[in-house]
Image (cartoon, rainbow, N blue to C red; front, side, top):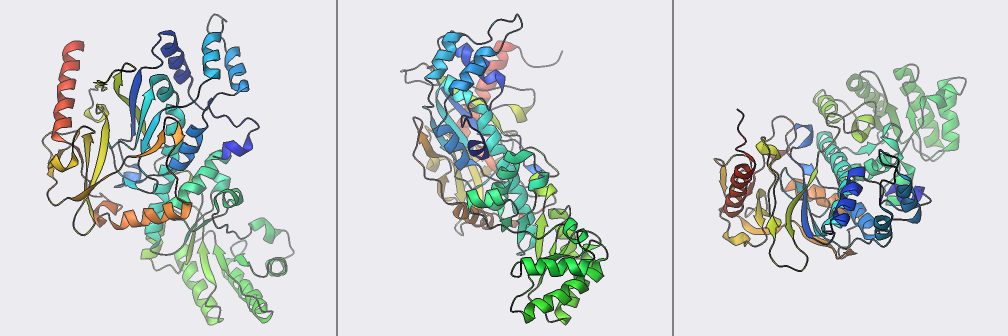
Length: 497
């Protein structure tokens, strides 16, 4: 995480909402800090009106949870916070308790780079309720954002149809931390490189870049600016050609490129940042080829996203590399994933029986699923994903022959033909100790492409994608319906008067 190497105090324990700490003190004062709890993280709707999400951020989450504790400066700050009467908001004895706090929960999670879908648990946290509650905000912040950007990047890469896509978004990102996380998520989603040099250093991502319009404007004319850059960076020349007149800029780039070739170097390409990109790229490609500069690539930038790339492709644009900035790193079109973290079971410390919990809502979409949950992914004989089954851990996946839509009991799907159901939630932390070695970033990135290759094209289309089947086992569905009925009987029938 970027914050870890930008701050003198590396603690991230206060990267949370105040109500998490308020609840923690409440658990402490009521002497239930060690009550065992089970929480699940999931999201409800796919972003960008799409058919899937690329799961990202797990490695950063593991790093943060492994070292989660309160520093001296954290506790000093909390001790200074007043309540409405000017008294200390937090009890000094509670802060003394936090001083010795260490995260000791068990965490199961879906491996990074997996393609995931609404309603299925992506992280399962089990342990003392105070500990499991405290990490909610931090957990959601890390995985929600990186998954969102990785998904946006995957869609953009798909639209580019094999052309490299690079991340140019740091200057438009939501802060330095946001820019760093966006670069990581974008690379996982398939981007070939980044302009973010810090991300290149920390993550090993290839760094790429050209120059700005200010470089051209700093010289007498465009030709002189190109020549000066060629002298400074003879093996890294991509000329931005639209400062004054794009076609004249292409001609100047060609002349300087030919001179570079005479000196034993080669122009890498030109960059178009404005105007009619379809028309200009066709003309520029023709001019470069006629000059014998066949290896010089046409790069496009300027508020691009998957929709515009697809449009330019359909118009026959001759663009070889796509540079994405604002619309990638800000997830244009859907600014938040909306992942949530819900309590699903409780038991007193040392006792064996769990008491399942659920949140009931007038909206079926917001009614949670109780229990200790696992997700099994079913594939057909060709390795294509066909459905995901959410089951209680007490169940055997082989005994689940059909699944039921969590929002509509009349919709079911048979799991006939499911070959070797794969558990998605795997142990990553045990009693606060990391037991999972996160793969290298390149391996996570490759997993995304492998996963997307196993997903039917109907789920990947941009308009009205086919809904991937995710459902509850019949046992879990009956349990949930019974608990909903019981909750409504105890708290009113839920019907409007």
